[in-house]
Length: 320
Length: 320
Image 1 (cartoon, rainbow over the protein chains, first blue to last red):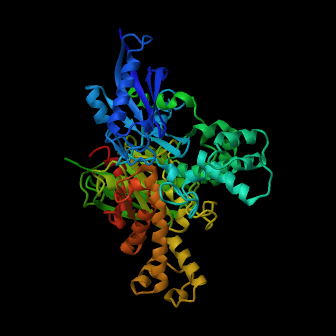
Image 2 (image 1 turned 180 degrees about the vertical axis):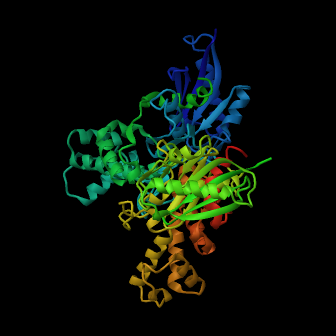
Image 3 (image 1 turned 90 degrees about the horizontal axis):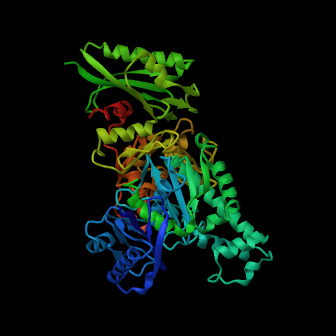
């Protein structure tokens, strides 16, 4: 019998990762293309097609049967199967599922934003198998979210629900890429914590190893390492980030009352350095009826392959 | 054939209204009891039972068959059928559906909070018949909300989802009954607009008819009448209320991306006086992908009977 596999695709601003995924979420083989080397979306989709064909011909994958293609991408619309208005991709609009569908006739293709894909992966392979109401918050360059209620992911009437990164955390606060001010992701994300570090460096006279790095060079990982080494500015930056996250999560709970909120992505690797102040502040700001009920914990999915497995989960969901 | 009816019950802090409702949402006959005259919840539930029995014996209602009882109440838990921790009722806990179930064996009984009941009524009898993703905001003494996504009301893991009145609208803002500060309902509700009027009276020297009324005497209706008569303080209070509502609705959209947000309740009667600034500010604060897509409009349900019809809708939903 041929082994059933799903192609999972994780489209990012820099890299697009493509893998073949089995029903347990394991990435059997994968490859990588540089998203921004393709002048047109046609060439980009063509490169994805070639990558999938090559992976299927991998001698380690004999007789595999492609049963579907699932894609996580920024600004992806589940209802239309398209990328629409992505600020950090070379093309504003990509009719992903129809273009790829021409190359793979009869193969089901599903598309959603990257955070929603992670939420589905959490349902299929992760710690949310038995949960009907949960939320995934992804902390990367920005802050993404996937909201599940009544056992179903919320896509909204237009396919764009779940932009928790763009709720107002601080009225009149920091300028956001989206054109608004005070968005949650300007405080809580890899970029957000950098901005907090620079605010602390500006406002205090504390010594810090972070005073030797430029804004463009500084990474969230540098801040994490500095905090682990006892740098007080870095430690305070994680506390502030956790506090603002926690206060906003209290609002998240007031909407859909999830039993668990999973935190996923690079910043989540700092674990209690961010999760402890987040938990404390979430409890502080929760309305009485929600207190001491909501778990806040790191995602059980490994960061490395979750993007690919998440895309594939969109398809596996209908089969397992 | 006996005419099928549902008992719809709307439990409020002062009054509890009980009616018999047909499948179109029409309240055929109804009565009223004073909620706070009953020292125990047993006596209260007993009075509800007696009222339903009396209504069924009404000579105008020959041969009606009670097919279910649906109840909207503050702090009502859909999953358990109980009222749990209601601040403005005489009893902290009422096992409504099990107590009433003993009196009406075999009759299905459903309970949810009042705003959720209005949202279901909007789905069954109102303007949301064809909508899968919408939100109802009820403006009364407080601010309630019912959120529908993927065609289902969101109850959350604990039955308490949809407390949009208690998201933080102004960090560190007005003191709320819930023990927090800055909750949306401290600004946007009948009580919220009174507080805004008193802030304006304190901060400005403007003449206003509202300077002659005490806080306890002042009603949202007085403010509406004053605004219609051109009182500048009252007009400004509606604008501010609408602006804060609109900014928070932009956050609501970022969660579930509804196609329509319905505004229900006393304050909604001021129509464009509150809805125009709300619409303008919602659009101003919406992230790009949501702009010019979301309708904000008054509920099509009449205020008078919507509580009773909303309770009944919980049952009719399973029959029509």
